Length: 233
Ligand SMILES: Nc1ncnc2c1ncn2[C@@H]1O[C@H](COP(=O)(O)OP(=O)(O)OP(=O)(O)O)[C@@H](O)[C@H]1O
Ligand SMILES: [Mg+2]
Image (cartoon, rainbow, N blue to C red):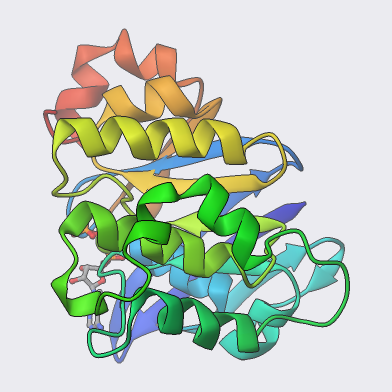
């Protein structure tokens, strides 16, 4: 479904991604692991068209998408939930969803607001509350819901569990498991435990390069790899 081939992405002169390649097959849940600054967000932003790789190819559903603008990519089946969530603080939960819905492509509709509120009962209760008043966990749920109403076939989640209480992390994990039945998912994390539960395989990035690919269990059973490339959970 997604093939990233040897991409090089820069911020000015800074060479953030130095030849990243990865693949996500339809129906898979894949995790991109790595420490602070490894290039996880830059990889997702490159796929989403928020930053453009200077070299390399990104092929989504058979079509080259590198260099396309983010709004084009969003309309063609990919959604990103960014690390900082980007909820509109002055808009209500309902309005945040309405704004996102206005951007969805024409065609088959899987995520009506009704279905969203079924999946996220918490958001239904908060629908008239301003985004700025939500807790971190509630904002993360809203950010994921907002991505879903754009009808993605590939969902990119940037550190979806970061800074959240264990009980919320568990809810996010359960949500990923349910979404995985219908949506292909690529998410990032800094350590192994969450990925081990919710992803079928993974990649480790370090300094803008892929240093490992394979099963998450192999990483878990290799303390040296964890110590060298990952954060302690
Ligand atoms: N807007 C930017 N301008 C300049 N350099 C940047 C920018 N964003 C990221 N970088 C640099 O690019 C490299 C990769 O950063 P990136 O944010 O992709 O890492 P990350 O793996 O997502 O880290 P984190 O776990 O902290 O989110 C880092 O060296 C970072 O300092
Ligand atoms: Mg990041």
